Image 1: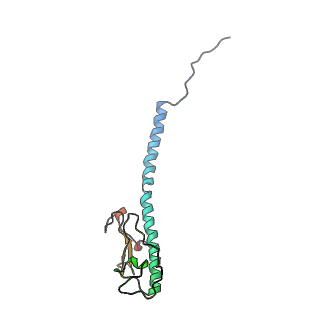
Image 2 (image 1 turned 30 degrees about the horizontal axis):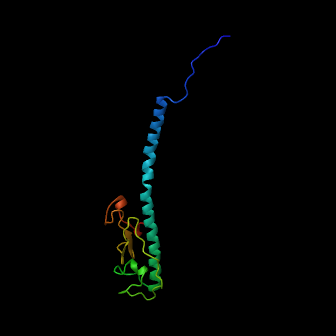
Length: 146
């Protein structure tokens, strides 16, 4: 009986195979990571838009009860506490129109102007930088965008 002795090939990956996998993972990471990193900013913008819609609804209820929107001086606080000063609300709802005023996702108060320059009232967030103007994430987000 004659035996052929062939050296057995060791199992495993070659260096080239490992390098190809690493390159593919690097390409995937370069494509996917920037898309995932933008999600928190998108979520903040969506929160601003939802807050503005809720505040708009509360302002419209205020107007239905009192026949006018709160003045700029009375501000959004008129939705939580009965405002003093003119125009005095005729039928202010006991308990207010919202429980509390939300802050924008960057910790700044929402801005309110009545009369507004873009509608009956302007309701907006200054954006991430908390200052007027700006571009991208620092741009103002308002009820005129809805």
